[in-house]
Image 1 (cartoon, rainbow, N blue to C red):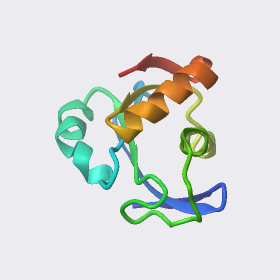
Image 2: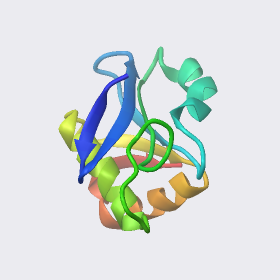
Image 3: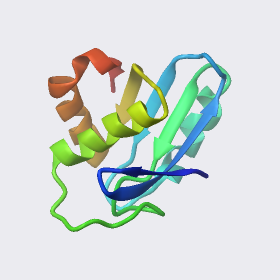
Image 4: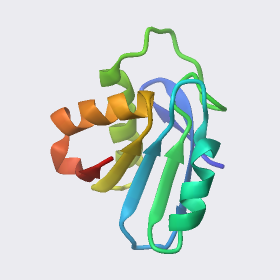
Length: 116
C-alpha cells in the first residue's frame, strides 16, 4: 500500500475500486486502522472508488507529536485528497472518524457530496 507525506506525517492509504467512479472516503475509529472497513470496501468497490487510510498515530501511519485535533485530522484528509487528485467525495466515518466528518462538513462542505 502506498504512503504519502501529509503535514509532516507519513500516512498509509489505499485507493481501490472502479476507476472514474464516485469516491467514498472511509475514516476509522480510535485505535483501529484501515482494515476495519474491509467488509464495506468489498461490498462497494465494484461501484465506487474506495479511499481508506490510517489516521496519524494509527496502523502503519507515522506518529507526530500530539495532541491531535479534529481540525488537524480533517486537514490531513483534505491534503490526502488533494495529493491524489480527488476534488470531491462521499465521506463515512466512525467514532473518531465521525467527529472528523463533522469538522469536514462545517469547514469543507464543497468537498463532500454526503457525510455518513
